[in-house]
Image 1 (cartoon, rainbow, N blue to C red):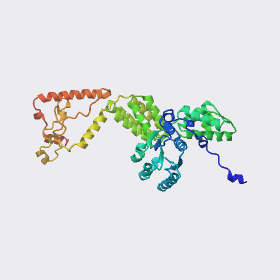
Image 2: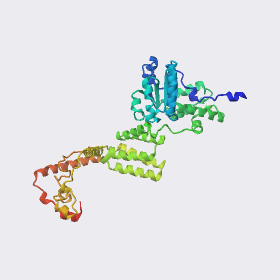
Image 3: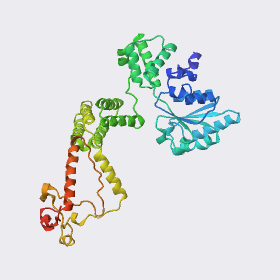
Image 4: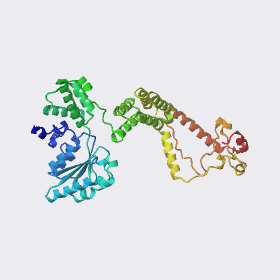
Length: 453
């Protein structure tokens, strides 16, 4: 009976297969291959503070532990999820005791981006004094989530998700060490690799689930159907507030802008598959219509709004078809950012410019006093002019040059808009050499009876 109390639980597969040497690490060849940065750091035997940035399950903790072993240093792990300033102080006290007995310390902080500014600042004096070698791990972009002071004292290394071949290699290692009693067919392996989505830890968890399910079913053979039916297959990796989210919406937007409907559909479906809110995607799709198609095809904005409305009426998954077809339409529509650029330039000009008064001939004159002050005088009513255009009339503030912000492109409807604007400019130039047309101007009091503007 005493053995019942001395038994230790079997470690998870991810822990049992954790690499013991650098050569056992699967993936990250861009950092660990011959002549690559982390390989050189190991070979030099000189540790330095660093930030390991990458998605979950790519080996950040493993690398930190291997560094402590390779540099013969004490390893102190902290989790920013559970730790506070008190834990940081305790870790520094332990590092000082290590130093007193001639041992270096590697302090590993997992999810370092979850520490606030003051907590991150607490590491600085100890990093600068050399008491610790700081290794932070994060799934978030350190440019945004790590204090610049700490970031300036640490080298950033970018870790990548494992590719399909590397995940297959991990399956073979697991079968060779602990799961040799199971037989996986190709469909099962492909399904496991697909749902692991580059995450080694997730893959090993799925393999553990397969082992447990196979034992319960009394089978050794695992095929694709068994994996689909017996395992808990969650959605792919997708952080709704992190880089994966913004990288994918950026890829969707750029695929639309690049007129590639297949790529646009791929990223749209990837985001849906990862759990993105279709309403968010609908808003972004409407924005794409105005930013990248604009007046080259005004139907694009109408269609995207209709697709968003269709989603609201139908919900998921039926409404997603309307959004998908809107994405296709945007991708194949003629492109123009002329309206977008004109708006941005105008907004920037107004933000830095003085408040220019409205010219008197453009002012409204609903009262007798305003008429006496000349408001609206000599305004030319465009509908009474040839071609419905008051050639040579000025609509900008006095003293302001024509800025030329809106420059339509030679695509779609904007090609016709450009042609029309060119014709109107010709009429303006002709009017400059013609006799003054002020005598043709409609009296202000007559216009007031037609409408104030």
